[in-house]
Image 1: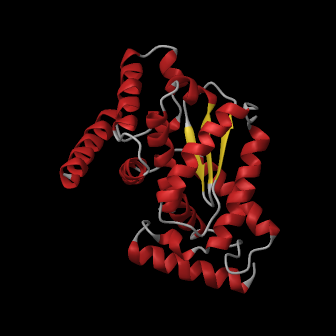
Image 2 (image 1 turned 90 degrees about the vertical axis):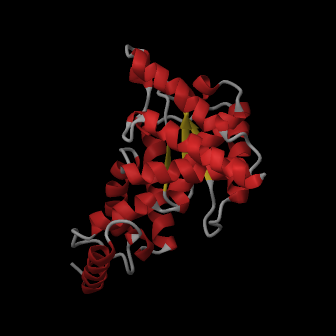
Length: 246
């Protein structure tokens, strides 16, 4: 165990204790975020096959770039990919990687408004550094990772933790925040703010019906908070945005 890593982790733990989990990821540098995120994205693409469909990928990247153009974080480069999997899902990796599944695109059909809402949700997870907050909290109880001057072993160890975090459920607060930020990004980029709401309504119907189709809903949509509550909050936010713009 190196002293620089221990000192950095003690300071991080103290900061996380003082301010709570929210925002603790801000103590991890952008370089560290990108290095760990790149390793996680490599692991994702080793585990899951990417879809080789130039038309679908061009669409996802076009919508993704529209969102990138209006978001507030420009210290990283964004990359959008499609995973060849029938699950209806999407997730973001810190440092700028966003993945959607073929199952999600099939469910969306040709509607870019819904796609923009879903991808905006994921972009907001990155810009708000939600996964980095969770990683900072996890690292606060680790003693062998040097976040001050990490080497390849440190990056591998942190990436192992982060891989689990980004492919599992976020907290209720993070999900609400990603919904709100994603809706704002989509509207600012010129898409209909009802897109994410309509998609969540469709998924709510699938959840309520149950059966085999509901088993295809991935973590983004099956996790807490309840889909009905997410819809209600988004409807209230969109109404307020429309009133403000008049």
